[in-house]
Length: 196
Image (cartoon, rainbow, N blue to C red; front, top):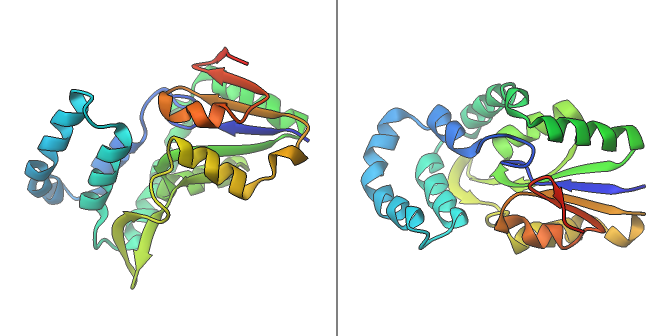
């Protein structure tokens, strides 16, 4: 059996799915109140002085702190229903090809479990992603185990799967945050171009 490791945003989808979910799920008043705190991070990100991982961590903290998990995960389940409409044609074909081969398909993403869990369940894929932390029945705004990007993607794959047990490892990504994931593969694709 083979294993196929797919980044989600920009690889499977045509768009970043994290930002639209923030606007959908975070109350407008909270966005307005938190914007002055976010602005310096947004500026630093625009000038490439901080990475996407850092700004996602800050936005997640401000957006989800002290929220009811049931409410956010219900919004995620609803949002997941829209994600098939933003899938890349190449991704659909490749995912179907892997499924027909009987390969294990694993989505490895820095995006949120709130919407990736229901999306992966719908398609029968395994998932490694950014998990929202819950304490005392409330979201903390932090990630359980940290942000799932760059080297953490590769680490979590290796923690969950013994890659030597598979006949072949495929990996698909589209940004520098996916380079360590791609390095795990026997056959790798970056922006849908074969690189190894």
